[in-house]
Length: 324
Image: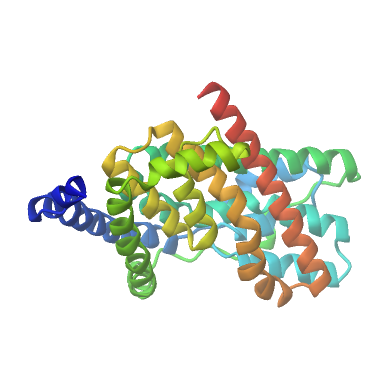
């Protein structure tokens, strides 16, 4: 108990907890604002021209390419375009499935700025590596769908993907700033709500030897994740039990205290990503998908997306674990 009492001096709490936590909250606020502002500035037609070769290679119809471009700034608009085309009989059920899966890359990029600028204050340079690996997984998914479409869909005549899209609006900085401030005020309290208690908890858990006890427990009961250090299990648990920010907060606390290497940290985040996404997707996405597609098709789309997502991240995780 004497060792514990020594860690709870005013100086230890100030320099080990208050100062780094305040710095972290400031960085989070700045990162969240910048990332949200970038999200608010979008484009479509330029992306459509880039997407057209992939659309043709995958034998997808022009509506799939237009939906792909729309998905870079509005997932709802992209899915609505597919649903309406399906209802009109312009695309088959298989084409709806492939087109929706094809949109996983732009859907990911839609939230990429916020993801990076939120993760960076928590885990520093590891954020670029983690985000880069998840981008690699998204690219793998896109290439896989292009290949699947090439093998399963009939050839199509030439078309014009960009012709199905309206002209891009000019950048409205005032509108983008207003939208950013609205989202910022909504998201920041939630992030602070997770960050402060998790950071404080990890500060004390490390000093009270909890992670040492976890190491013994893992050796006896969690052999399938025994390749992860015990500290990393906290990241996985928070990823599964709460919002993604909670996992970053747990990771940030361990970075500050030197509890994990960069590789171990990134591997833990990837594992947490795989294990937490399916339940979170059903909870958050099903009401939204069911409002656009019929419920049976909506559930099938969600399951297909999550299966493909988990498989692609698992491949990236295995590759990084082996060669990283």
